[in-house]
Length: 469
Image (cartoon, rainbow, N blue to C red; front, side):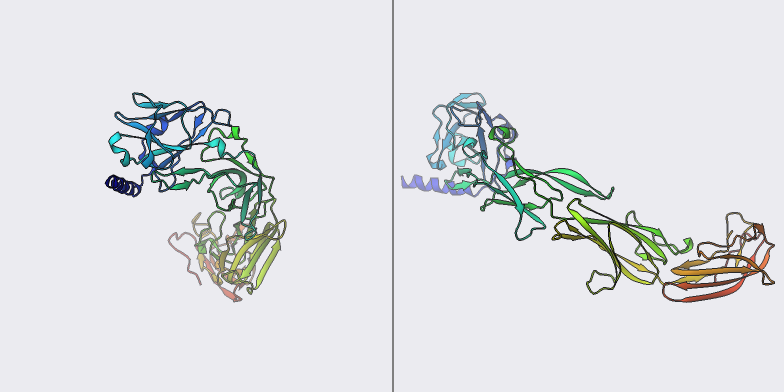
């Protein structure tokens, strides 16, 4: 007798050392397990366990009554059940075998079932624990939602009016275990979409693991919403018969989320000097003054109410950084006219003024100034090529240019560095030859420019390219 007990103990230890994932169970086994009357849930296998937990749902939702279970079975196998461990497992006396199935009228619940060859009982790896869900249902519960005391701007805590009834089972080795039933929570939220620079409504569902303290935590939504427990792992398709969903009162959103979009409206840089492209909604990292930038903020309203746009000197956000612009509002424009490095960002606070958010900062550098003047152009003899007397420039905050003839007569003037002279005077072409320019300008870096010289209008030398001074 002692020898037999020792062998059984060794076999149990070997069995407990082997774990099988839920994927190792053929789909046909789960599909052919059934009950009448009522329904069975899909089997659930806790991580690292061999058990397949199955909930029996009475047709009325209350009281199991007489239950008939049907199991899949292979040739030569018998159906066994146990309540404490595999050591006391016995063949099911009322089992009715028919081909590849076995039916059990007046089946016992709150126990384990498995099929095995009579000589291989201790080699069992897959077993079902079938329980009466009406005994552990979510019926007659109330749900409340509030902000977490430690993180009131980031996290919501859900609390039930009483502890959840435990779903307990016994392993083959006799260990008493409690299953994580998980709660499926549904609520409304809003999500930011980069392509539209806007928030859109979205219904979310989360499976929350069971906790010892009876409270569940999740990231606070961005919109006002109630929370509804629509079931757990075992109630798919039968939630209504247990009085679900359970809904909380509406919780006003406190968490705020802010996104910024930037647009370069204009730049003090000639086309020839422009070497930095701008992505949609973003800025080039290098700007030429005067550069006008538009900033547009969007946050999760109505939770978000107070917006600020900040532009400060330096490459990082710092309370000590000199602020060059601070604007209360969602949209603003600013013109950079001084060389340097700047950080642009937005901030927003909620309607209680207790929760804030900051947008991703953007760093830009306003370049040093540059001014180069050509000495030749061909306005009439090479259409589309070198038609304008035009400077190459960047970061000029003031500019004046004048063209004179050989006798000192004023031919043309302009004050936009992106402009130029087309070789005409009062709308009529001037003769080819030498003309004189006087240009004054100031750079964003404080550099003063005073340039003068001659420029040649050529007749038909297509290969002649201008030199810049």
